[in-house]
Image 1 (cartoon, rainbow, N blue to C red):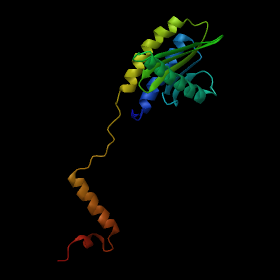
Image 2: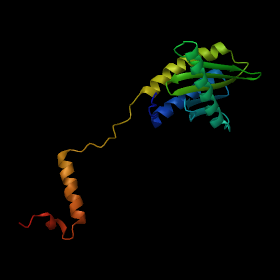
Image 3: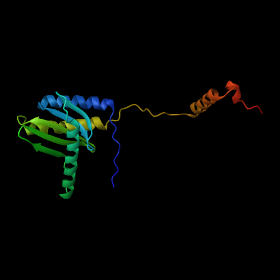
Image 4: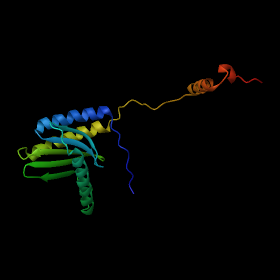
Length: 171
């Protein structure tokens, strides 16, 4: 059984991803872009309008991509990293960015699929690099022996009835 690692994305990574999605939207003149997890949770979107079905799109896209992974396995392929649906007026392009993140793009039939593929391939490289970066400051508390002893003494003083003198050994 495979274990799933937790997905942690910093505010800076989201901001940088947002900027890239908006630039991609401008270049492709597409309707809706989103980064979603393979578990079906939206991470961020780029759209001129509030899309009421974002959660449904994320969930269904993740499910379709999971099915595509199973198809690859059945066909003895390592993986399929792209999913494309063509409609009468809207197309859906889904590409794998990282093991846990997908890029979802909707665009009209007037946008050439070759253009979408070309720009998306480049965007995936940049997004993967953004999402791999771990440039957040180390927020783990580091305690040395002096700090620990000082903290213990201060806590004892707070709860001692006689003030700091109660810490001295009467013997």
